Image 1 (tube, rainbow, N blue to C red):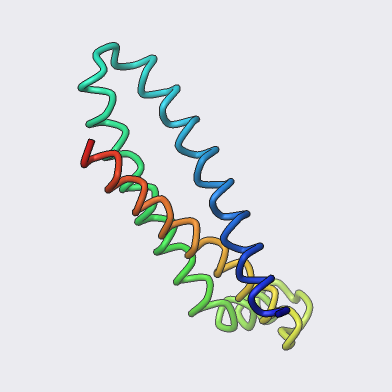
Image 2 (cartoon, helix red, strand yellow):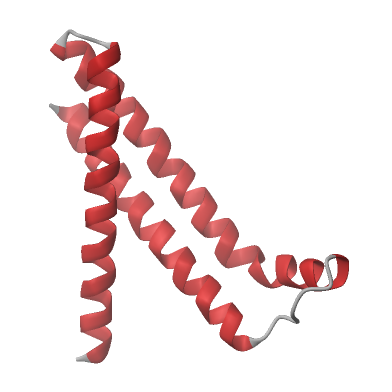
Length: 113
């Protein structure tokens, strides 16, 4: 039950983040474009781009976090990279990836309208 609960909490938080992002995007696009048909087109494009960027950032954070940690420890003399920091970086990457996936799905839904 703990795994299912944590997955549900992750999806719920990412859904809230995605809705906030879409509402902000809608406000900005609506101010710039007054026609409703143009708003839907521009909003779907913006949301798809943001979803893709979120997936790229999340994937990079998950893939390269140990490398960046070692570089930071060597160059900037920061704390050495340990398993706890790796788990935290992976947890953050999961949020980015899940939010990007939800944004992509919502962008496709808006473009279908």
